[in-house]
Image (cartoon, rainbow, N blue to C red):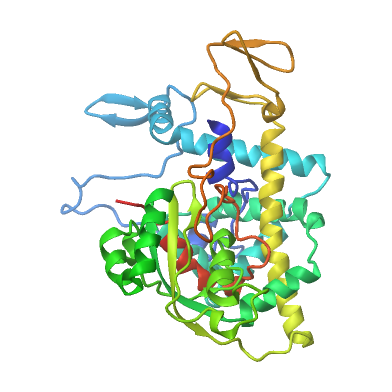
Length: 433
């Protein structure tokens, strides 16, 4: 369905193709011709007998009419239209989805009477080249992208930089950094770090069985991780994560219960003997619909002694939290525009109606009745999903399925913490054998 594809893979695919590029050096001078008062370059020497029979090439304009020859093979013509049809067959779906996403954002920008200028695009490229590229020049950064990633400067400006700037402008007014956000960011940056091992399985029942087995023999965690875990990234290491988990790290439906069970403990239990310690094992924690983990605490790095009221630290944390929440807001803006739009994709034969998610459906005699009174034959409605094992007592950390967010790390995960938690996320979301 195009709604899913556009929402996931093509948010950063937008427009503003630069019309003119600067020509420098000898190649530019030759293409532009001699300057005023400059003598033209001498004509090329006539072919010698050695190269008289060599193939001679000349620069020609690319054919623009569909029936124009784009290539000739042994006097057989390949037309521009044939080339276009082949490109559409191979890459058309991906390119069209990118164009649809770009058009949605262009329409949203125009509706809000906003604009993205060429100067803003150039400034953003300069900023990214300096921060992400390690201080390289704009030109070096663009050459590197073209050589290593196959992304031309025009594609980069149109499909990556423009959408990023446009969505920021559309979403920035929605962002508010709360005192709780600041507290979460401080704890994520300067709080404890949990070193741990994990065992990942696909079913809740399997997780409960392993948990019961580990209650009797906690020392078996490493060996069970090597033989039973579905996480290929950590299995060979006995489930050991390469980086510690920061508090409030993404995904929070894993880090929050992990810290509650293995670091904080029950706040109502004042017995120091019940305080979580190294070697403790969490109950099953749900990662997503098809993954559950057991987590064993190996050690805990102490919090760093920093003053949360330090103005320099507060400014840093505010900037981090604003960026994190801005990314969430950018996703929301795009998804709202997508949901509110009617999109007919004639290449894939799909149609997405505007606000179709708000249409109430009910099953009537094997048909689905919409709020508009129309019916769709042969489509049965489904009831709410049941939670496996919800009727029986479950171990700590077990609960109803959590629908993970498809957006960027949520509030409480500044960029410094995201880097530390990235290895955890990749490990927990690694493909299973």
